[in-house]
Length: 99
Ligand SMILES: [Zn+2]
Image (cartoon, rainbow, N blue to C red):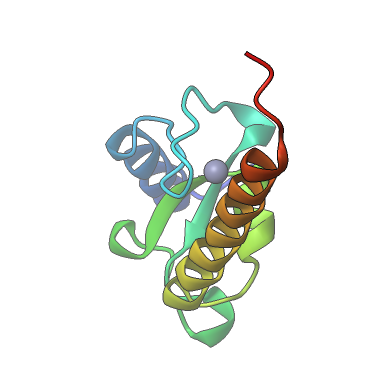
């Protein structure tokens, strides 16, 4: 499918600005299917396809975020990271020191 020039130009500017790096997890060198543009303010709620409302996201982060507003997605991810950290700490304290 051929994109209209304004869409293509906006897409290229956002990709150049974000240096092909996911703005959520930092994964870099994203190309083709791995590189998505995410709407900061969701398209379903009137968010526009403009540079100020778009960022580069990897496919995984874009899928995880879905249509959540960026603020609630970030809080959700922080809570997830905290749970993972607590699980790791619990595992470390249960592991006997074999040195
Ligand atoms: Zn990512």
